Image (cartoon, rainbow, N blue to C red; front, side, top):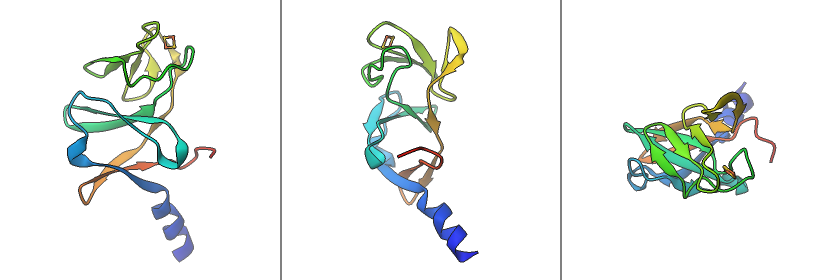
Amino acid sequence: MAGEVSALADSWIAVADDAKVNEGVPLAVYPKGVNILLVRVDGVVHAIANKCAHMACPLEGGRLEGYVITCPCHDWSFDVRDGAFTQAGEIVIATYPTKLEDGKIMLSLEGVAL
Ligand code: FES
């Protein structure tokens, strides 16, 4: 049992100081080499893949309006809460659970093939 608890705890990785993730300013992080974008909207930090579903452009230079980030390359847009492409919800980019712990934004890569 103790091993299970430990494995679960290990799935969370500190990726940024909470104070460095500013409202409406996407921040790229690379836990275990995975390119992820942190986006704070209304105080809540969301984590999405920093890779567009169209032709893989990084989303970090995109335009953020509310919960929607628009890719800088060809204007595909995604909801940062669930990764859904706004024009066709069946196209989805990865999202990751986040939590705040001791002033750090923690992110879970559980289930991600590394
Ligand atoms: S690569 Fe993002 S819209 Fe084309």
